[in-house]
Image 1 (cartoon, rainbow, N blue to C red):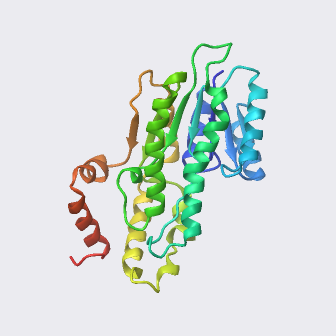
Image 2 (cartoon, one colour):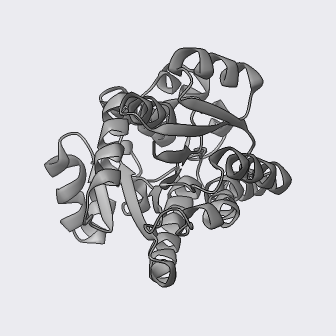
Image 3 (cartoon, rainbow, N blue to C red):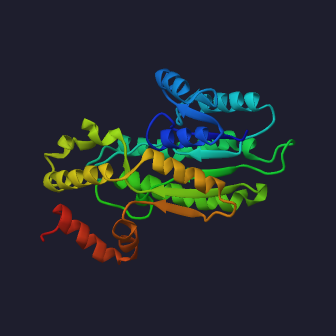
Length: 282
């Protein structure tokens, strides 16, 4: 039975991926931050799922989890690492607190590197198998097209894109492939939470109206996105592809939501977005 590690398995894309890999006979190690999530996922997914309680910003906890996985695998190694754990913050960059921006990068970028460093020995070819493991880093369409008011998040995903390409080229030495999967909007319960819709802390700024319009649009797009189960199935198929591309995008209505925005000149896209959310007059 092949084993994979998926970070951020308690909800969203990580949950969908964990559920999919378990259903296809994989031994899944999934990172969560809360004991209650560990218990719930173990009960739901059965014995092929092993929860690992660690935060990607806690180096000691990550290493303890890596040691635990190594002990349980008894020299067999990991077939894959899926770096999914992440957070999303929002706000105009000239007003967003610097500590919040730092934390965005600490989780999405430094955390990804920390997990990769700790688990890399388990991805290298083991004595009992010839083939090394494979890494999938979860980026976002925001890693290529940066919308206003999510600059910190988009910046962290741009960083994930660049790091993934460098890492893939470095890990050729070990035969370990690194693939980027960049989802667009994903329909999860987060869009119904107050935190996804509350922009009140910026109501006293010059961006009050435009950020409210953008947030309403962003939430509506999120609710129209693919389910976490569909994205999880896509990730599993990419993982099993013999000769994968270096990067994949999964997004609903790809022509309008991905292909055309990516092809438009930056200045045209600036004006289109600006007029749609009230940053420019229509």
